[in-house]
Length: 215
Image (cartoon, rainbow, N blue to C red; front, top):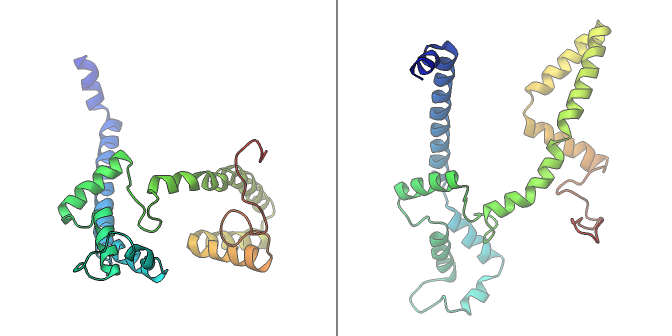
């Protein structure tokens, strides 16, 4: 057993992979910490945004009729802000919020959604996951087939076609993906009308569902 352990230690690949894994964990820890810090450097917090959103939608009248408001508690917007502050855990110290941040990440319990409260983040991800996979999974075979076909043609027909295709591919590779996505939405969604601008289907279609009646 000791000989096996010694061989593993003497293996240069193990040392190389170990250094890469350590660097990966350190980079991931720093990136997550920066994400936490940047989210708390925003000029407003989620509780303030949600309270103002609900107040602007005219829902504060229904809250004023509830038992949440008592004399001396302030305006309805302030009460809403207090409620959301407790719900989102913003009333805790930064150290406690940082510990909860890592605990929720490691346990995959991401809490409530700041934008779609009272829905949880996990439920929103589960609902959007099938549509995301429906877009991602076909990309691999289509990209493999189309990419190899174009590459073989470019290698066979050398000259202007090869150079032109090279510059186009380099431009598309360097272009920001979100900018390119907006261009595709503009062309195929707005100008040609082949695909919906937002969502997974157009307004003229009934929302599909996975059921025996839908099949």
